[in-house]
Length: 275
Image (cartoon, rainbow, N blue to C red; front, top):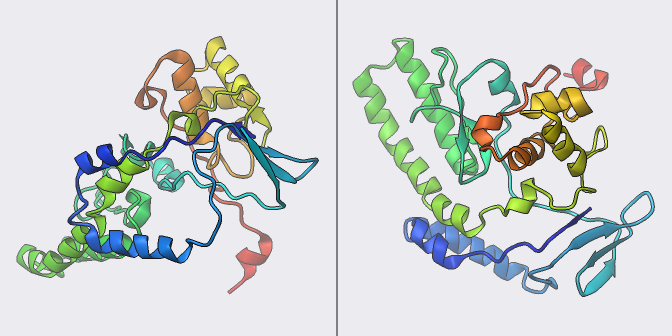
């Protein structure tokens, strides 16, 4: 595995995005957590990161340095898990800030289906506080639909919850701009990079499939089996789509996303038989 350098966060762009003052409490919490880790050695602006070893990771190398290790953790952000919402046919929209698909929902989580609401990070990453508030709002809206709450009663009960969600999401524009995912996260420049670990498909193979006529990840699945392994495309789907978009000069919206198929997440017999 290899990749270029992670770009330095852009404070200027983040400040222009707004939300810093409104999200001050959450920002203060984050700074306090960083202060607690100040003794942990850090190497910044690493270029051409590589995980090396025989059958397992044994060292991490980068331009200008290397270190032995037996565990490597990588994190470039999180995106909504939309396998189920896609499978049941809900409308989705491309989230340019978080580089992902998310269900189209209103302020109470109501989706394009009249009887389905989506709450929490499945409708867009916002953190646990926003997720709890969105779940309460979806429940209130369900009560209104069932006639258990009047529109006036809904407005009254929802007001403080809406305020709590706004507060929880206030810092989101700042964070999204400060830590915008670089292009190479979804479009690895090295053709040898393994993008579908289940089926051992490389970035170069996906690009070649696109040049041969694959217009989206579902066509690439037929060419390469990418997305047909145990993870059902949860790990590789976004990268495969981004590589096809790059190769064909298309947008992520035009390329689309994988059509999920059951099982959406592997389940053992023991888990199924458990309490």
